[in-house]
Structures are given as structure tokens and as C-alpha cells.
Length: 611
Image (cartoon, rainbow, N blue to C red; front, side):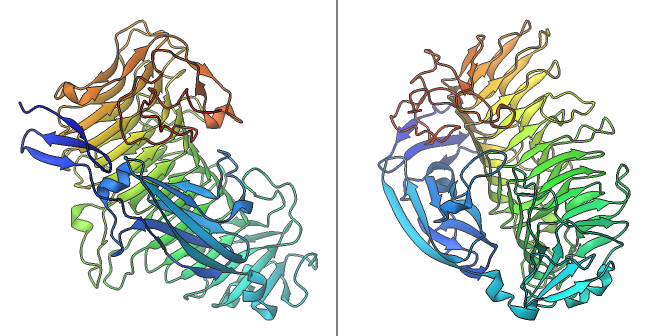
């Protein structure tokens, strides 16, 4: 057997992974990481969704740098505030892929700073110009709709329409128009037809907002009750924004087949902002239809929405440059809460997601992240196929609850699907087993992975209080897809307490089907276990496992958590964990504290960090 060697290079921490079956080597990059910030758009009307990447000058992204370098974004928008659920700063993001919504007009200087493993930093900037919607939709280009004759708060030079029938309104949504519904108003409708077009089109609300919640959703948001069909079919539309509305199903309780949005063909650049949606078959969903004229589904963003009580999935979405930011997703009766069927250069962050398959024992997921099968991929032009696998996607700063037996599944949708997922970062997420509505299937595995080039770092996975079996992280081959390889499992905290069962509990389990993985600096707490417990189970290559600790003492304090149900807890001082880690490409901890002294603590919390 060839020995495993971990060697430091001049510009970065370089770790070599060996696949013993083919003796292939997967070196981490010793190159200077790419530092060219690129934006999907650099101008537009507020609210403006912009997708960012850090790339080489040719627009390509480097896999090694994606995982090993530290990317910090400042969007130049300090007034954007914090995410209502996680309290994280909206103006900042981490990672080579990022997204931001600019809600106020102005010129913004977006800054990117990249740090490599040797401490060398690069910086770059770009400018985003945002136009006022009052200017972009001036005069009769804004249509204000009231269910009464009350137009309090409506622009004086806008067109005013009093109607209870939304069919009188939809035909007016031509490119360059804005339709605003009266806050406090209610409309009931069946499915609607809207004009197709390239936009820009905005659908929103006017009037004083009252009772604004932590997501920014007003208690008196315009209510639209839907009996059947979709409020807005997405097909053949581009550059639309739908915001500040409240949708209800008139069949709340059974979901029915009604929906709010749906589509499969030729749509892109759509923003769904501060929507409340409850009681539908799927709250927000779209699919992919393989026709030759299809344009790739691209730049779809769902931001600060409250979506709940769906019959099937709360969200069923996918595409390129997808952004799911700051949403509350809860309670799917039959299936998954969030199912993402493709995510290329995408961001899923600062969401709270819980409550799968509540009406059955199917055992679905809070997050199911998979990808297109090999047969669904092809050239972008005139093929009727998707151009990209799922890859270069960041799942960070989310809170997952309930949803047994596998709350988070990053793997093909089933064993018969050859879906090749790669280059995923899963970091600073909190999983809490008892958060939200619980289904009938207890939790067994917090995070399950079958993919290549995956980094899992700085997460807190807490299985306490529900179920007798528990493994924090499982890496295994699902079926016909290539075996998982090049996994990095660093500085996670895995906990199960409060259950005294004589069953086996594991921190990290790496199956024999996995080609290569490194498991380091993880901290596992099983204080109440009476059965067999292990920090790491890695039977094939035990030499890839280093500096992981299993403790049985109670570990937690809560000095940072503003909402302990959502934001997690901090580790108390543990002498055996302090400065006990090996050098790995992990630059900060769960709370954003720097790990720059070369002696990382074990687990997700850096004790030596300044509080």
C-alpha cells in the first residue's frame, strides 16, 4: 500500500488524495487562486438580483481553489440589514459563488478578497448600478390595483384600477410595466394568463406596510386566493420580479392541484421576494421540458419568502445560477421540503427548512440536492438537454430540522440514476433533529453524501431527542453513479444527547465504496450513550482519518445565539480540543471567527477566537 503524505506547498495547504484502485492522484492546487469577480448583470432596476462568481479571466472556475481558498465578498450595501432568521449580515458572503439583492437605487462598489493557504491575499472590485423603480416605471407604466376605491399610498401619476377580477389586470403586464396591488386587499381567482415577454415586469404592492415580520413580510400584504391553476405561469418570461404578496389556496388542508408559479420552458432571470405562500400542492416550483427551443433555466432567485403547508414539495426548483436566500420552508405533507433537481454555480443559504412527509412514513428530506442524469445532458444549442451537471454550489448558514430519516441528502435521486454531482461546499449549517414539525420516521443520518469533490466544514449536527439510531455524516455510493471521491470532512461538531439507547452512534461513517476522503478535526459528543459509539468509522483507509475526538461530557453554552432554536450554540471551553487540530483549508469557524493561528481547535467553534 502506498503511504499517504500530507505536504505543505508554497502558496496553499496541499493535500494529496490517492485512489488505490487506479493510483490516481488528486492534488490540491498550489496555484494562486483566481480572483476575478464576475456579475450576472451590472445594472438594472431595484430590487436587482445579481449573481457573482470568482473566476479566472476566461470565466472558468478552479475546483481546487473553490474548496481551499477563502473568498470574502462585500457588496457595498451596508443598509441591506441582516437575514431575518439567521441574523447574518446580508452585505457579506463567503465562497467563490455568491448572490445579493440590491433593493435601493444607487451605485455600489462590490469588493472581493481572496486568501490562500499561505496567507497571501488578493483583492478586486466591480461596480453595480441600480435604478429607482419610480424612475424605471414612471407615470402610466405603473398600474395600481385596488379591490375597493382606496388608493392610499399609490403614486399620484400612476394608472389606478378598481377591480375584483384579476383578468382585467394581467393583460397590462407588458415589458416596462409595474403592477401594484393594494396592501390590505383580497382577490380570489382561478389560474391566470399573463403576456409572455422579456421584461422588465414587476408585480408587487402599494400602500403603508403594517406588522412587518423578521423576513420583511407585511401582515397586511395583498392576499390572492387561488382555486385552481397557476397565478403566474413562468414559461416564455424573462426578467420578472414578484414581491410582497400573500398567496393562499382556497383548498387549504389538502393542497389540491392549484399553485402560484409553475413552468418548464424558456424562462430565466426571475426574482421572488418576500412572498408568503401557504396551502398549495407546491408553493414554488418549476421543472425542465426537453424541447429543442428551450433556453437554459438561469438566474432564478427566491429570497426572504415564507413558504409552508404544501401537499407535495414546498419547493421543487433547479437551474443554473440559482439563489435560495433567507427563506422559511416548512411542512410538506407527502414529500421533500426543498428538492433541487439541478444547481450549477448556485447558492442555498440562510434558510430554515423542516418538516418533510408529515402525512406518511415515506421518510423524505428537508433538502434533497441531486442533478440531471447523464442522459439529460447535452450541448446547449438546439438539443433539448441540460448543459450542466450539479456543481460549484454552496450550501451554507442554513438551519435544518426534523425530516427523518435523512434530513439532508446530497446524492442521486435513486440508485438507478447516474447523476454526477461534484464541487459542493456544505458549511456553517445547523441541523437540529427536533426543530419544526416531526414526521413519523425518526432521524438516522443528519447528512448523507454520494458525490465527488465535496467539502463539509464547520457544521453543527445535533441529533438529540429523536430516534435511537444516529450518524452525523454518511458518505456512501447510492447506486450506478461513480463512487464518491475527494471528500473533505473538517471541523464539524456532531452531537446526540438526551437519549439513552443501546444502539450504535457514529460521528462520521465512510463506506468501503468511497474512493478517497479526509476526515479531520471533527468533535463528536455522545454524553448519554449506553451502547457502542465511535467518532469516525473508515474501514478502507483509516490513515485518512486524523485528529477527531469523541467526548462524553456536556459541551454547550450559548453566548452567541440570538435565537438558539435557529442559530445553534457555542462550545464551552474544552482543553482537549483547543489547538488540537491539524492544518486544513478552514479559515473561520461556525460564527465567522478567524482560524488563522495555524493551530485550529477541533469542532465547529474556535475557542481562542476573540468574542
